[in-house]
Image (cartoon, rainbow, N blue to C red; front, side, top):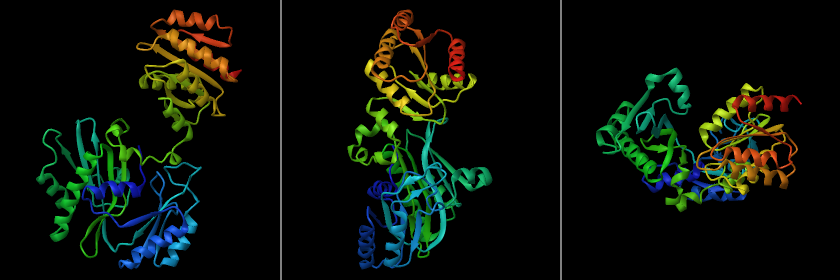
Length: 390
């Protein structure tokens, strides 16, 4: 689960991470009030930042330096309501409904520091670089020697010497070195405590007066651990998510919209990937990734069809089910009921294999519905091709 920058900073601050001061606003007047509040505490320059679930906001015009409160008002008017386009939003952009008014900082140097799981090693890895303000992928490609990596053994946790190694290799000295070590240790603590999949600070800055502060923050939370964090689960902003993916989640379906013309419904992520390959080989393009899981029922299958068919680009649907935990006859009955209850306006190809596959195929055959059944992968591919060329 993604959260906004201001929410990420709330999580970090709770665990002792030094973050740039800021106040979130939903309207221009709230933004002005936020600036006036900070001005009373001695802040004399500000930054107005769009709050969307995407990086690259500055390049898209979503981050504006605002020397005065009047500039805050002007920039808030420009940013709120705009459709901000970044490399992570796609060409359609994302509407800005919230902004963060922060105190401007005098920056002496920008750094990068992030924590995530290295699945190959089975350990968390802390990555840091003196090349802050730049995407870490670009640094890895162009200046890999600029990235410091430290792996944390889960059986013993982050050790003081590792914290010192990171801060020292980034070139911190004097009081800034002490602050940097405190920062790295607190960041890792926050990452673990929140059950995050990534905690990324870019840029981390050293200010002219020697402070070490998170200027920006990105945290993604593990959906599977949210039951332990009701306060964090409440941070979810469904307005930032694809409406179809939100709807799929309500039915316990794993759905990701793609740009193709063949909808696919499967059970199991591996089979989903294989099915998308099958669609490509048949000359089509997958329109979605939809995994109904191991407990598919008539209700979930019908919900899956409705979600797939809400995409006007879908010209055919391929259902590819392996009956292991779920029985093929149960899925077949779900397909039949779904086809009866909705306006199935595109060709439907169903491939069943595994537990009660023969019973499932018989149900489809005797349903009287225009459902094409298949047993072999090649047979399914041929029928997808025929549907697309019809």
